[in-house]
Length: 503
Picture (cartoon, helix red, strand yellow):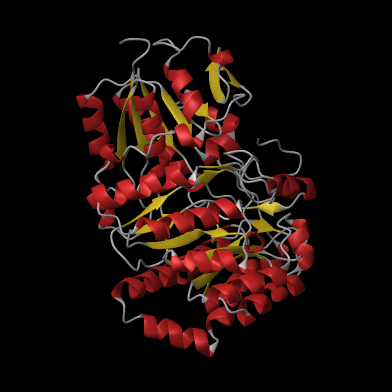
């Protein structure tokens, strides 16, 4: 095979989605588009939710000769990604395997420790993956490729990130031609119930300048945004070529550059496209103003999530979110006046957080003008400052590799056992949705089958599944309630995190 042009198999593994809609594999589609731009050939194999995934994987490896297999790996996909790698090794022992995404980026050396993993790609993947492919069939000169981890003579090595970042305006649109888009149009979308169909998620920016202790840092701290021309060109392409009528903007910080966000809205209004917008991944309330909210509404926005996390000013500082809660309340009011449905993201169970501070969050959520709430439990993913804080304080954790989910309890602090924090998790939901206005609106919305289905999935995920998990963890890891706990890390060992390097 020519050193310059090689074929890569990009895989989203089967994994326990825990009732969460998956959407199409947008990260792999961006990577495939960049690889094709650089002269390589790519195939995307989406195995998520496929009961017959091993047969499909074997068929793909039989039909084509690949120079590399790349597996995407968020933390919740970790177990599935490793199993996929093991299956590839047994089916095609000579094929090299690379893992990329949040988990390998946050915990590269642990990921590399598995015999079936040859390389990891840490952080933004376009440039390192191309250079890895161009290192030749024997993968030479790996020490010069920024952003990759590799093995040599039984040792694992991790190179620093590449000096350059991808210019987002130079990345082609995702490789939609490699995906069966109608299949994804028929599935539930990973966001609010759509107002128009079909709907699809897009990204307009990368990077986050904030330093929240619970968050990963895949795309760096420099905020980068595509130009309004580039964004509108992709929307127009999807609108005219694939009939898309609603866009889920999945950015971490769409409103970070408010003048650009406003210009995108104006371009949409001037485009003549009859579309709807939603922001299910969350926006920062302090990066909005009344003009922006009104423009978003006029451009077709019907729903947005707002990252709030805590109703306690002290916890806001502790987790480095740093939101002023009065600005959050103002943003929610503006959205309500503009006819935009709002959902608030909250998180409880941080180290040193007290019961009184959790009650501040409960009160803030309950008495706000939010329509919906999603409450998660602080999860010390490897590589985050939260994980370092947990180690420093010697807290016990339960990090089950089969359930690295933000709805499960993972940290036992001086204030909370696993059982107790799960009770506060459920209490927050019960308090929020027991207000008559929300109950009435929720029941009225059930007349829409799509919304009803969303509620039923949420009820299953946030109540029944996690109640079952809580009972399981209570017996296995927290048998004496307030007086017990354990630390179970991926790999099967049980120990406290204090003094244990896991990054």
